[in-house]
Amino acid sequence: MVEHVVVIGAGVYGAAVTDSLTRRGARVTIVDAGAPAGGTSGATFSWTNSCGKQPRPYHDLSVASMQAHRQLAAEVPDSDWYHEGGNLEWASDDAEHEELRKKVVGVLDYGYEARWLSRAEALRLEPDMDPAGLSADGIAYFPREGWIEPPRLIGHLLSRAVSRGAELVWDDPVTGLELTAGLVRAVRLASGRRLSTDAVVNCAGPQAARIAELAGLVLPMRNTRGVLVYTSPVAVSVARVIHAPHIHLRPDGGGRLLLHTPETDAAAQVSNAGEISVERSAVTRVLEAGRALYPGIRAATVESVRMGERPIPGDGLPVLGRVVELPNFHFAVSHSGATLSVHAGDLVAAEALGEDRGEALAAFRFERL
Image (cartoon, rainbow, N blue to C red; front, side, top):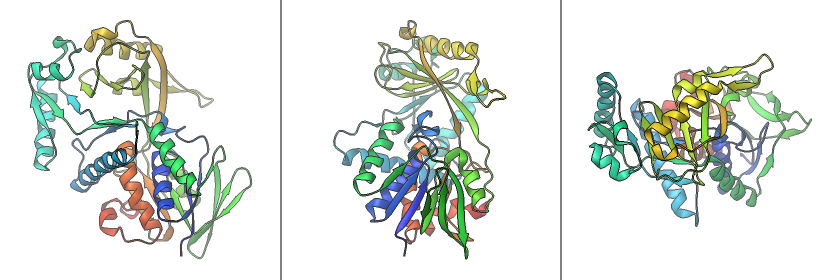
């Protein structure tokens, strides 16, 4: 019988798994090498979507996960972390537009909500955009998409879990796992503490491969860096996720905007000492692209630049659930954690306590790798 579970990682997955485990009556210790939301979850675009995700089981998991976010936000009075404003996307040339067209056709075939807007229709949704920055037509609109504020969500989930008896341990990295007779029996921490356990859930994000290695498992990962630029507060109307040809942006609370481009991700550099920095010119280009689309932010300055490491399993798909050869060791690792965490975390938690979630998790097992 599973009574005590150690959850490794206090990001969106770790918080969601811990919340679900405690709701089911388990005793949980959640541990993190840093602070809750201090890793990838604190530096993410956090776009909730299933926009072109393949194969079909990944799409379906994402759609169910979007619904789980809606349900959680509706159940919690004064919830403030979930924003379902939709997503606008358009292309800069014929080749990119054809790719966008194929994506829209694909999601419509799956029953996902999407439609095409004219420039005038898009401006009714986002009136502060420069019309010159928009296509005359061919603007894709995905109305059920949105974004979350991960630290607020994590704070809610962990607070609820702690109120049910969960223990939160931070600034104490995992240094070892004790295995006996094909099971994990204990988790060792840098502080010297030893946590006896009936099950372990690996929610360590970019460090998931290292934790797996401690269990004698090889988890292929192809992590990437993400660079996000946060503006000072600006007096413009931005209510949605925007994927324009030269800038991705969304609101970020307090009148700020969150800006991103793939080119800025590539500008991140790591020194010999392991410190990550971004070329100032690259940050300036991101801000200029935002100003070009929303002229009202021309007085905005860069308030902060955050860099995170995106955890991406080797084939790009989530790794979820138990390991066959080590049946009390479980994974909850993926890209798109902001979208998937609440629903997928609940599935993993249920399985960790012995419930059957085989059908829902079959496509995302560790063994496929």
